Every structure is written in structure tokens, then in C-alpha cells.
Image (cartoon, rainbow, N blue to C red):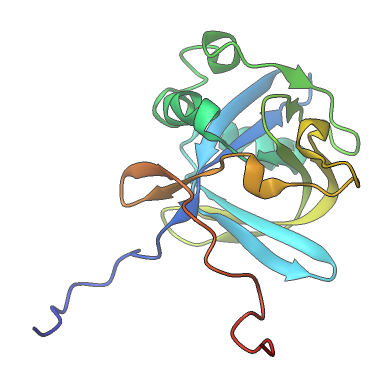
Length: 187
């Protein structure tokens, strides 16, 4: 069998399905789903999200330059989808999904209590790219849920039941195949 050649498109899957929380200058919060997100740099720690300008939360980020990336789990899958298809212009998604917000430590945007990891971000650069604006942001703080700490204080991200988004569907992450460097580790 050969390969088919397709028109250019975004086929980089799977992606994290993150819930992003924002607040306007008066403190009104909103939440929305982003799959176009990722690590940009480790030193200094930086991430990015890409948001369509017509999204309700786009203006919140434009006005404040702040947001929080909240990792999602199997338990948050329904809310993750809902917050991606409903608009904060029309409904209070936080209330609708019975989500709990906590104050940010370094930014005005709130943290999502139900998320195992919250990443507080401050925009460093905005790239107007076409269908989406990319916000490249400094990581100002990271919060990890103590429920996933082992006896030694090590965070057990693998126990959080994270979900990913791939080509229109949500999936839980599968079995561990190895860890970084296992291919060259001496046996």
C-alpha cells in the first residue's frame, strides 16, 4: 500500500484538551476549551494557546493578557466538550457544569479546582496568524492537586486520568510504554 497525498491541514494529533479560564478586568470569569496548545520553551517556562478572534474569551485575553491552562481528566470530559461548543456570551458554563473556581496566585484569571494541574500564564507575545491568534505566554505559576501526591511528595500525573483530543474525539491516555531515555538505557 502507498500513501495518499492530501491538501495541507492540521493533522498533528493527539493534542491536550485543556480548559482555559480567563477573567475580564472586573473579575467576570469564563471558561473555554482549547486543543491548540503546547510547550514553547523550558527556560524560561513558556506555553502557547491559539484562539479564534471571534471566541468570547479572546477579548478577555486581549484586555488582560492573562489566562490559566487547566489540564483535563476523564471526569472533566463532558465539561471539556460542553465548554468547547457553548459560548460564554449565551450561558454561564462554569455554573452549567458545576465547576469550582479558585483565585489565581499570580494572575487575575481563576484556577479550575477540579483540574489536577493549573498553569497560570501571562501573555508575552501575540501572533496574528489567520484563523487563530497565538498567545505565547510566560508560565507564572503551576498548581498541582495534592490528591495526586505520593508519600514522598512526588506528583503522580499518570494517576490523574488525563484526556487528549484527536481528530474530533476525546480519549484517555493509554498504557505507559517507557520513559524518556529508555531506548538508550543500559540493560
